Image (tube, rainbow, N blue to C red; front, side):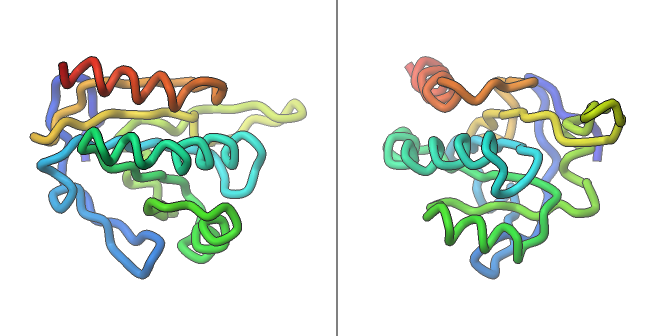
Length: 157
């Protein structure tokens, strides 16, 4: 899979997700898809971001958009996170980093002086034809979901 960028079609993918399902991009097309990548289930920033997407899902749905979260956590971890936080959209498990690499969200991070490869919090809007229209990288959680929604609405005007 090649790296995605604005104006380019996203190659189809199929990966396991919560709810005993496999998510295929081609099954979601025909509507906008908001796909957000986050580092780890049940951490503070990831929980806040996921809960904000959860709370905004009715607005996104009314704007004919689907939301999908992605991390390298297992489906079991995602299921626990989904249950604990009452998430109302699927979380994709990407342990082999296939999707993370395609979207170029794996970056060198530092924690307590140690370097490691981790997911850079990022969000993408894919239009109904499967083309990337908007990209946010190095996302700060505060107000991010509102920004994504406003951008989506403006793009539909």
